[in-house]
Image 1 (cartoon, rainbow, N blue to C red):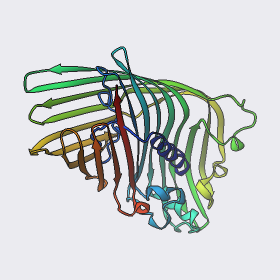
Image 2 (image 1 turned 90 degrees about the vertical axis):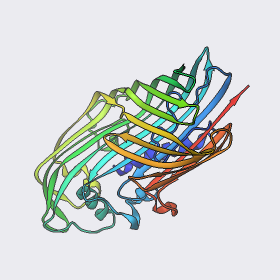
Image 3 (image 1 turned 45 degrees about the horizontal axis):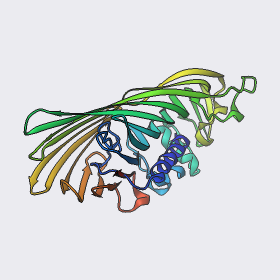
Image 4 (image 1 turned 120 degrees about the vertical axis):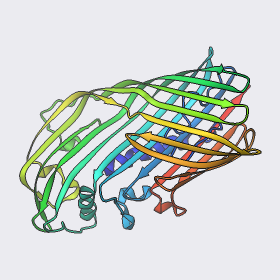
Amino acid sequence: MKAAFISTFASTIAAAGVVVALLPAAVAALDFTLGAGAAQNCRASATGISFNAGAMAYVEPAPVLSVDDYGGSRYSPSRGNNIGIGIGYGELTGEVAGFCLGALYRAEYLGEASRDILDALVGNHFRRPFDVGRTYGLSLSDESFQADGLRLRRVVDIKFSDEWSASLGAGVSVLKGLAGRQESVSGSAVATSGSYAVGTATWLKTDTNLNLADFNPFVAPGTPSGYGFSTDFEFIARSRAGYSIDFIVMDALGRLYWHDVPESYRTLDNATVSYNADFNRNAFVTGLDSRVTFVQDLPRNYRLAATLPVVSELSAVVADDLIESLHFPSVGARYGARGPFGALDFDIRTRSLSIEGGLPFMSAAITSNSFKVHSATVLGISLQAFHTW
């Protein structure tokens, strides 16, 4: 779980850093769409070019920047399952025959693990023994991917009345997979001493970057490859009085089709697990290594946001992001309907604050749930710009 998140999060930060100027858009706290809705940054009626890039990470049990050190001294997991989410996005878009065509890069991670397995891994890293007599519930699932490709979008403007109008955007992406991973662990182990536990568990790992030093040398080397697609939709309704509703669906249907990918399946049945890093595969006494073809469904992401005018150019904003049955509601305020603007948003679930500011041709936003960056379990950045000629 740790290694997968670190590599993916590093990629998301890189994606955000490549592009330093992008188009203004409302990016509230923990906006997992990263301003990439199908109706955003697409002005097919004008000749121009737009840039959009961002990265967002939320690691429930430990600060984002110290996750590679198992949380350091700030490891504080929830009692039940703990989640980790990392999303990175970068896109360069231009107008082509009334459509918006963009070159994009994506990197995403989604993981969930029980406190027991995290306690065991963190304790091992800091040389703390097993809790004698404790039953460790071994539950972990994670998946990630990196891909680049092309995205074609079209935005249709609709006028309902003199008061209300809307924009409907739809996009289709063709993706080339750069890396893909799916992993699951389930079972339990009882600590018989500080150094050993007896347990029953299964471990399945499918990974294009699986360490082949531990892989069966009699299985053909192969060359992993993956191709796929994604579809996105967005509906924005606006009134002349300043009210608006924005509904986004990212990856409404998205898949990566992987071929020739290393897969390792391991089981242990009432066997002894030694005290070693990551419950390494040596403890899993039986198993099977192979190369497989599999389909990776891209997690669907929803966002619903509403803007309500308060006074003059001040508006209230309420929103909710939904990813894998997890809700991230937020409330905030925005000043400036046109031209320069500033916005503050507070995410209720993670207690994170987003600060955004922009000009007519560019904007930037940062998100965190701690003024001390090294203590933050949420970190995000978004940069956008647009130029017409």
